[in-house]
Image (cartoon, rainbow, N blue to C red; front, side, top):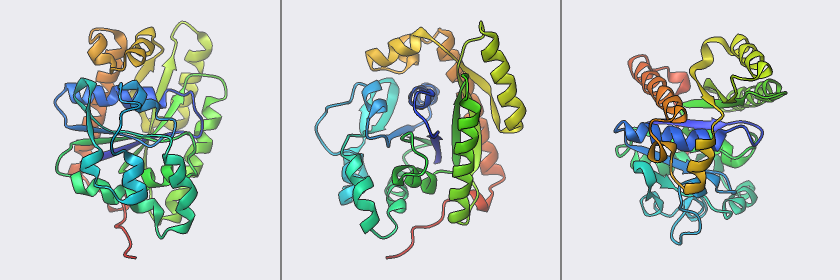
Length: 269
C-alpha cells in the first residue's frame, strides 16, 4: 500500500482537485484506491457527493478510535473515501493533550493496508498543523502541489522547507515530488513560471502537468471525478498521465526501498 500526501501551505492551488482526480484515474486503471479527506472544510468529500452523510467519519477515527472500516464508504468512480467533516477541527484542538497525536492516522491505516494499492491523503492548507503531521507520519511520498501563478513558487519553497524541517524533527526524510497545476498554456507568464518551477525542482517534478479546465470544475459540481464525467477530455488525460507516473514511482520504491522514507512505528504509550 503506497500512501501519498498532497500538501501545500496555501489553499487554491488545485490540491483537492488533484487528490480527487488522481484517485479517480488510479481507480479507473483497476488500482484499489482510498482517498482520505483530512481537511475540516471537507472539499474532497463534497467533490465526491458524500458531504452531509451521516455515519462514522475520519474525525471519529482520530478522536475516539472508531474502526476505520466503519468510516470508509464507496464513492463515485470506484473510489473508496474516508470522509472529512468540520469535526476534524476538534482533533486539532485536543491533540495537545494526547500522547503522540501525529500517529493516529498511520495506526488506523495499517488496519486496511492489505485492502488498498494506493491511499491518497488530501491535507488541509496548513503544513504545520496536527492533521498534516498525521499525513506526514503516515505517508511514503509527499506531493507538493504548485499552481502556475504568481508567487506560487515562493509558497511551494516555503512549504518544502517546512516539510523537510518536520522530517528532521521525526528523524526521517520525505520523498517529495512536485506537481504543477492550473496551467494555462496560452499565457506566457504561466509558461515562464512552469519553466522556473522545473528549473528549481528538477527531477522531483512530475512530467505530467494539470491544465486549467472547465471540465474539472464541472466534475466537482456534479460530485464525480473527471474520468466519470468525460474520460476523453484533456483533464482526464492529464490525470491518467499522472497516474502512470505515480504507479511507476511506486514500483521503483518497491524495487529499491529506502528505509529513511519508511514511516516510523507508532510509539508505545
